[in-house]
Image (tube, rainbow, N blue to C red; front, top):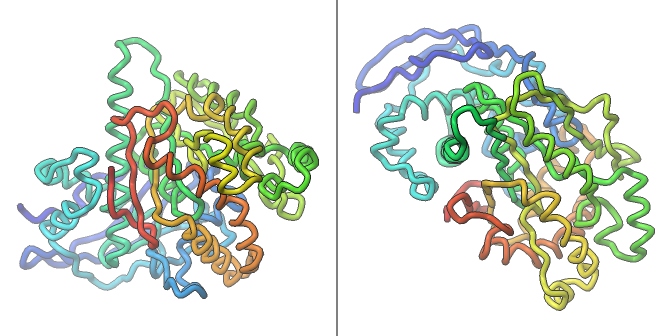
Length: 438
């Protein structure tokens, strides 16, 4: 395989780096960078407003956690907490001296060793034929996450080429298959892809990366989370008062704490954004309101999306959960009985809109505590308000019963109504890296 000029692909209008080649020898290429800038005023990264924005940024902290888990995969990142980074130049930390990068052959071998290729149906021959696209998508993601593509660590390289790019290619396959079902001239509704994954495992960052890649290749996408459909502060108070003593419904999170009518209205409207000029606003939730108890954000602050949408990325920690026999949930926690009853209405409000699924699988729900603890430690060390270790433990304890009750069925059967051919299950390790796909 011939060595490829890593920078031979044209940039999209929103990205404008300039660089020059310094040397070329022994199938390795050396480059120096100049004038690294990213134009960032046209983005739709409203998705990461308020605390959800920081949930992404906190995963990029270079601090080691007190739990001994070490630094995150995004080492040497210069993300600053509390700053809406899409308003800042992103490529400001690259070295100015020439750097050696591996040959394309080495990267090709690394890509082919990834755990997801077989499941998404990509052969080594197809990787070879499309290596230019792999490099291009990798370069986009390096710019997005402020990584120097010439100095990627193994965890960084794995996250990009074993995880984000393969999942993006799978989503592209799903979109093409979805669109092929419609005749010429028919309005094609956007494909809704559901992302079900426990808190802290990186689903929001994954969706963030995918949304960006869709943007740079010219596909209109929208992102929405189940968090956007939480009850108002008033509604949450009524729920708490109607369930005295039930710790699972004392705060937002579990089934029953969402405005399902709002979710139906929103998802229905999104699937109708098939024409130019048709617009709608996406609801958002402010978790910082009422001293952290949260409230729906003022509609004047909701972001607007415009058709024609090609894909909707819908993420949430309990997407795809199915109601279970009462005795089964009571055996986990008696307080789950009410939550289980509430869950019966969720298929019609959420899951039936989802045509393709990505389920991120973990081995032990207790990882959620460690991941959340890492995020809160990063927030505190960055000078932002964060929960204490005990507050994190209390917070996660309100979700763990649902994980223990519903995850086994989700993993063994898939979400309700899901097509096995349109379901990608990705098992991740404690470092949030994929180790298996099924």
